[in-house]
Image 1: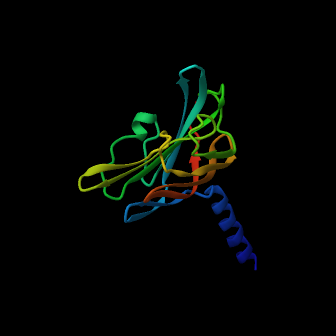
Image 2: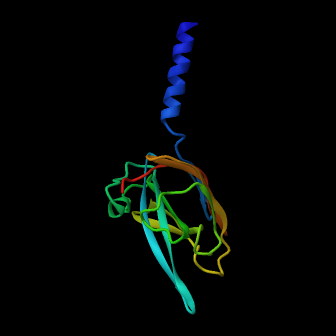
Image 3: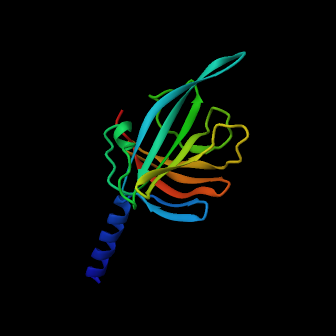
Length: 187
């Protein structure tokens, strides 16, 4: 009995430390891919949106990077290094914050929809794969008012070191769906 309790406690401890991980289902055309992240990070930025006849609007734009390989998370440039192997997949997506937020604003728990409203929405979604000796980028159109994209990103938990949530985005025959956990980069 004691051995059973020790094994159970060890299993619970190890699963709690894992933070839930990232498991995504990715589709593009007739191709489906399962994705489990081995590494992750974030980037903090801001954007100033301009529209004729309206005041400028500044919002934070924070990006989440997930990779099924050991991604160099030193900075954005290293996280976006070209892929070199057929089994490598990188998923990145950005969410914008509320008006008057910036790169110093932390991630916030909430639902970010594809609304093209400039605040509290999804700014972009990109999946990068490697096949036939080259990178292939699957971009989702989040910026055009003509886009047929639907879905949302939900951030359900934020700590000093990581965030968790879900993504459910579809545009035509492309989709990214599942749960994610990402390490938060130090500012």
